[in-house]
Image 1 (cartoon, chains in turn red, purple):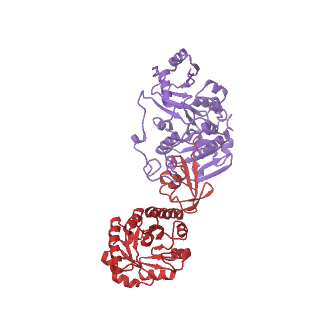
Image 2: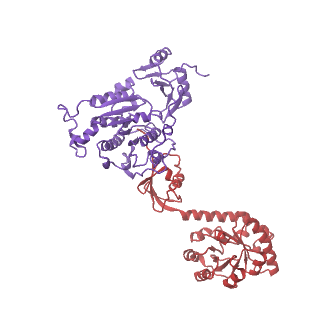
Image 3: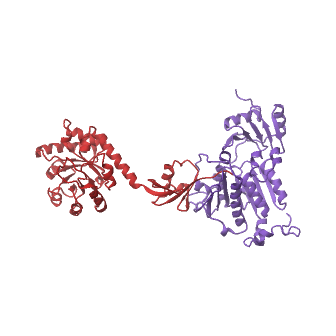
Length: 282
Length: 358
C-alpha cells in the first residue's frame, strides 16, 4: 500500500448506478478512469451484501488496471475480501478505531464530516482523509442540510489531513468550491450521470488545475505597474511576457539579475521588477 | 610630448586641477594614461572630446565607418567637409582632436573591431570607452576587458533613451552575464532615430566615470546601471551585481586559456565573410585580403561608377543603385541592401573581378 502517494489525489469519483440507467457500472467507472479519476469509491446503500461483493470484485480488478486506489463505502469485511485499498465511513457507521482494528495500519480510512468538530475528531482518531459536505444540496444524500462553502473554508484553514469537498458539486459551481479553499473535489452525479464521464472528469481536473494556477498567482510590480502573475521565477516572468529572445536588463528589487540566474531567482509576492531593453545605439 | 604645465599653457587644466578630487596629482595621472575609444560615432566623438580636452595622454580611436551627412545632427566632431570627402570617422575625428589639444597623442585606426584584433587594440589601455553601436561588439569588448582586467565603460543610446554602466573586472558582473547572448535585434539609432542630447547625456556619464578611474578616484565611481529617458524624463539606477562564480570572464575562473580566449582567432586569408549592419540597409563584407585602392579606382571609373576617393577609402555608386565603400584593410561596406549574399556577389563582381553569376 502507498497511502502517502494517494494523498496527492485531486479528483475523487463515487459510483451511483441510479444515475446511469442502461449503462453498466464497470463501463461507466472505466470511463471515469480514462478521464483521470484518481480515487474510486463503490457506494451501494441499497444492494445486498452479495451484490456489493460482486461489484467490489469487478471494480477492484478495473482500478488495479488503472493503478488507482479503490475504496468501499462501509463493509470493511468486503474491503479485506477483495483487497480494496480502504473504507469510507459515515458518521453513523462503525467508529474509526474499530475500522482501523479490522483493516490494520496500511489501508485507508476516510469519513464523511459535516462540521469542523467532526473533522477535527476524525483527524484525532486517525482518519486518512475526510469528506467535507454536502457543500450543496444533493439527490445522492436527500434530506441532509448543505454545509455550504463556509465549511470548506473552515476546513481549509484548520484541517491538516487531506479533505475532499463533496455534495452537489457540478462544473457550474466547482469554481466557487475551489475558491473557498478546496484542493480536492468529489463529484458523483455530475460525473457518472454525465453522457461522457471521461470528458466530465477532464473538465473537473482542468478547473482544479486552473484554481491551482490562480492560487499560485501573486501581485508584483512590473515597470511600475501592479500585475498578477503565476510566474515562479524571473525566467518564467520574462517568458510569460514574451521577452525571452530579447536582450534585456532585468532588475529585481533594485539589483540587476544576471541572465544565467533568471531561472533560479524566485519571484516573491510584492516583488518589484524592471525589465529594460538593452539600448544598443551609439 | 609637450610639458602640460608649461608657462604659456599653464592654465590649460587649471579648472580641472582646482577640482579637489582631481588636483595636480590627478592631472598627472591623466597625462600618463592611455584610453581606447571603440566607435567614433555620436558617443565616441563626444567621449573623445572629453578625454582629449581633459588631457588624457594617449587616445586611441577605432572606427570602421566614414562620415555621412546623416551623422552631422549629433556627431559633434564632424562637419560638412568631412561628409563631402567621405572621410573615415577615426581619421576625421583625430584631426579635429589634434587641433583641440596638441599635447595628446591621438591614434586613429580605420578598422572593424573583431575577435582577431580586439585584445591587441585594448593592449596598454587604462580603460576602454564604449562608443559602439551594436551589442555584439560590446559583448566582445566586455570579454576582452575582463580577461585583461581593464574597466569597460558601457554607454548606449537610441531615441531619447540611454543607458550606462561601468563594468569593473574583479568587482562587477561582465556584460555577457547581465544581458546574455540572445539577440532579436533591439532598437537602434537607424530604426528609431536618436536625439543628440541623449547622446551627450550618456557620453557625459561615461566620461565622468572615466575621469574618476583615471585620476585614482575609483571609490567615487557610480556602481549602478543607469537607464534614462530624456523625453518622458525618467531616470533609474539599479545596483550592479558582482561577478558570477562560474563565468569565465567575471567569475572565479581568473582567465581563459589564451587559445579559447582568442575565440575564432584571425580569419583565414582570402575567406569572405559578411555581416548586415543592424537597421542600416548596409552589409559589411570582409574580403580577407588588402584592397589595392589605386587599381580599383581605375577599374571602377572605367566601369562608369561615380566615385568619391580619398586617402582612406573609395566610395563608388553602382549603376544598380547600391554604393560600395572600399577600405584598404580588405573591407567593403555595401549600402543600399540588407541582403548579405547580394552584397557578397557585388563585391565579387566589382572588387574581386569575378563575373556576376547569371
